[in-house]
Length: 314
Image (cartoon, rainbow, N blue to C red; front, side, top):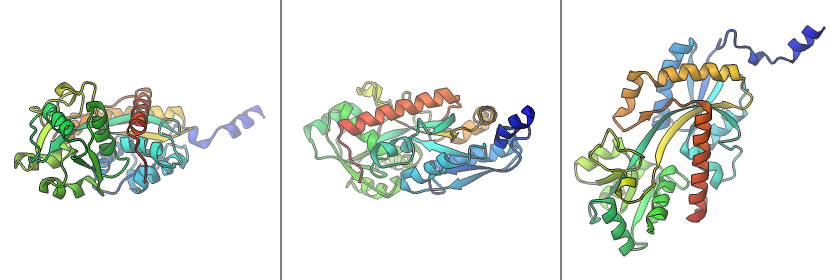
């Protein structure tokens, strides 16, 4: 009788003897084609091989990433639904009513990648270094503007963080995606922004935009000639786009550990790293506690920026 009772109390999803024995869904909180989608599909292809079951990318864009995040939170905690998280996913609940908290409602599995932005200005701005840009902005308070992929995006808050740390005042111009802002950047209607390294490189080479520095803690392999913003005088500044994978709360620990082991193998493959190196992306492969600590640091940092810059959601 005791044995029967114990068996009845053991959830079927807690057994990993044959896990996985059916396809796994990877929820990506964006439309196909963007950075999140590209990284996720690369992971899914290799995990399909290592896990022996199909890992299927399920794009659920909308709500600034909130729709996908909420779907992951409410999925059955059986190891067959996992989700991608980005910096925007952390920021969203800090600015808008949301049904999830990035640090409390999931079990982090690992951080997959991180990549810096490049600080670009239109050539009409007489600045070739970050120091010159800051000096020019201080001499012209409120006259410069910057573009972003929308209110509450990481680029928006990353630019506001630079405003805050450098003691300058520039005006936010939101666009529907980073690509939508390029025509106005090139035309000079937008003065500066934090841009994706890959998409901005052709315009920098053609001298239609000027790259001043990268936003990461170290110089980017893709643009080693550019200093970091921190080493250019804004000490302590660091903003990187990143992607990580997490699971719903109560997913059994043995399943989380199994997924982490297989994901780390993929992330540490030389070919996987080389695939993303061109745009300055670095693979990370952290463990769950390290990824959770990263999420908490991001939450604290962006909460402070939102408060100090008095940023409001629409």
